[in-house]
Amino acid sequence: MQSGLSASRPGRARYQTAIGYNQLLTTNSVELLAEQGHEFVHALDGEAAQLSGASRKAMITRSRC
Image (tube, rainbow, N blue to C red; front, top):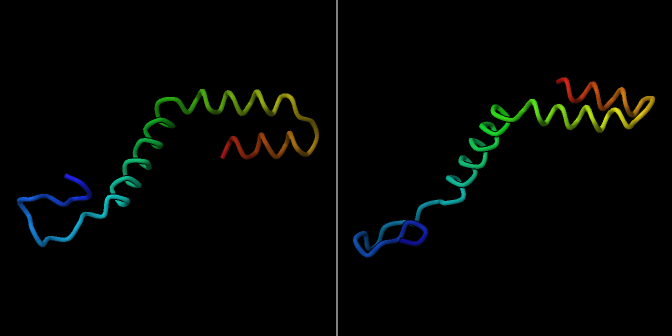
């Protein structure tokens, strides 16, 4: 089957596969953040540690939102 078209359903409209893809992308992104979010924050903290002044403060503030 390609884009929801099949021989058993002649004349039917195609599926909107982009909608399903976007839903999967969002779900997978949220799942990854739930499972590995602490590693992501740790990486941001490491980047912030290399900065100073206003740049460091901005980075720390954004990573804690």
